[in-house]
Image (cartoon, rainbow, N blue to C red; front, side, top):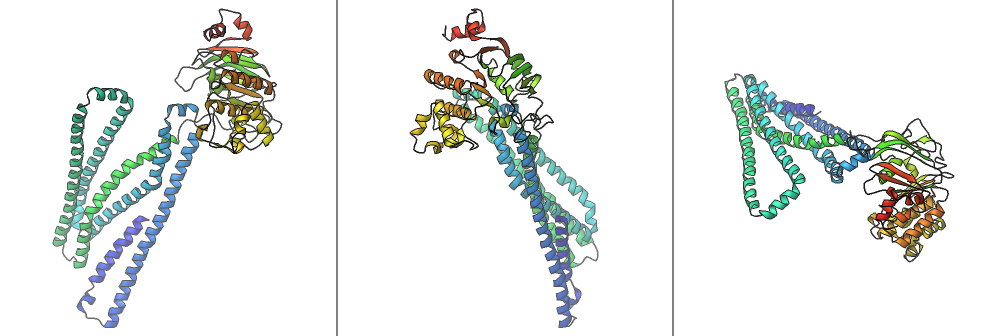
Length: 563
């Protein structure tokens, strides 16, 4: 479309040259009526060509903008979809700032900067081509020097690209060094502070050299442009029978080549710089995905109904290439059984929680909940049947899994929304849950009660209160399987005991798994699992283990001064 615009522009200028060089009009050997008719004819054609230019550029602008928006939207949607479905290992290894940068700066480049740069580049390319074609048609001898001039220009363009590459590699090296060695450099700066000024002075030479290269580039573009004007003028003089108006058209086009070449080099450099954003977005559009969202295996809507858990030779790691965090774990948890899990820091206690909810996928083995292998069902089958939606929703007459972690998650909004995210329960039920979680007194004194605002990450509540709010959320659901990952790590011992008694009463008919850092938290459990280096080393009644002085559980209890 831009080629048609440039063609109509050239034809308009050629037609204008023909109009001004009309011998009959110049000689005046025509009547006034004939002069008026000729001018009307020339004006009509010139106006039509001008209208065609406007139409073509309008179509190009509309279609180009639409295509650019569609392309940017498609790439953004693809990147968003892939990132949302990325496994936990992706977020463990990718800084949050980098992800935000992809969705902010790089997407902004795709939306705003890149379309303008591409438009400018296309305009400059066709402008240069139109100039060379007009001069070559009017002065055929000029075609013989086009190839040498193009080679000279390509050499300049390659130099510009190499300059851009050298500077980019230099900046990249600087960034890598600053990220990886910031601590070492900070220490050096403290020790030899005055040398920093010397270093800055030396860096100024690099910037000065870069400016010199830029000016050198500008000078050589001027030289190539001047050669085009020179050869255009010389060949026009030696070409017989050239019309003066056409000669003026060729020279006028030649005089415009300087700015066109400058903008072509600049737009090419900008395009090379900003097209990196496209590469980055495409990279995030191909990140590794977690397990399939749906499979042909559909568990019943009320699953799980009993709370039976079988772990069979289960092995997993946080990401490929790392050592397994759980190594061939095998255990059987009966329905409605209360299990305590203990172990030293990094033993793999919380990893077992992640495995139950498939935030970690097995490298071998399986986890079976109520006769269904969790690895073969989809993560999101539908609104009634899937794995992770059961963490946050409720359907009538059904039982779900629920997790209560050491790092409570609260969202900005009201207290009611955080306790009952899906607005499924009555006020009476919510107050009952708050009472059982020992928060009723604290909430009652708030002026707005359940409508009290919760700040970002719950920063207007204490750490203990945030954990109790999450406990109230779990109590409200009455899940079939409850997993508590150090649930009372931020509350005092007295509140810890009250919470545990509440959990025992409220989840009497649920399978409960408690990961605890306080030994007294799990002494009332039916069995205790001791994990060491990703393996189950003991799994028995807590009193039985305490009676064995050589047991790991006995040593943990002794080290915590519970014996």
